[in-house]
Length: 290
Image (tube, rainbow, N blue to C red; front, side, top):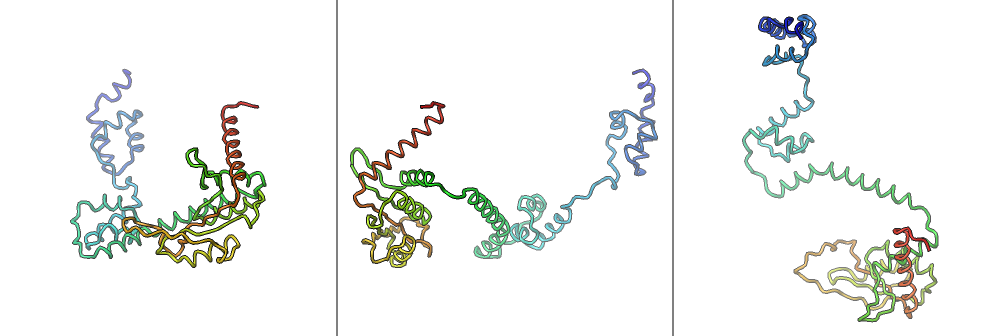
């Protein structure tokens, strides 16, 4: 330590030399070599308070965007319009222009909504593409279903969506109701698998009064291969003006009801199979082997 202390004994003179070299534009490494300063802490003290030369400042990739955002803000543009123009986030825009005066709100609410919508379109398109890729990859991993897999799937599907018997209300009959055409296709394939004849199946539609019941009958009939004339009476749901229904577009076709005649025994077999599935899961999760 004695050698190091004597080396930097004339600290103020050394500092003056270091500052002068820094102001000439020299780098820290060059100053260290010229003054023979091999201790970074000492070098920091020698240059304390002295700003680095301009050439050492790396350009910021967003400097141009920031300048343009401020220019657009001064022209009276809102965050939405600046985002649409530059494609950067509102949080960045806010940081760049928050010291500038707010523009007059001269546009209508509809105009503001349209600007915001256009600003979101690239993000929504990207999310939709990600959603499509994920679903496509997942669908490709399923492959062909064995009869056992379809059987177990159908049992679980019915127990989730079909009517169930209760101790206080015995209803040992198979009735399946759903608005999803995919669910209907899987369920009817399951009925075919377990041997339920088409003649034992009865269909009818449940639909809101504001929808096209005739079109719904044709749609469901085409899906399950049954003429609309073979359907039972349509159940029409009265519209409640206090509810905010979302299913009001052209894709809404109500629910299809599938009832199986004389199905008490089938219902008991479904319930038994479901109990078997639950028991198998419990056995697997506890490690118990029969």
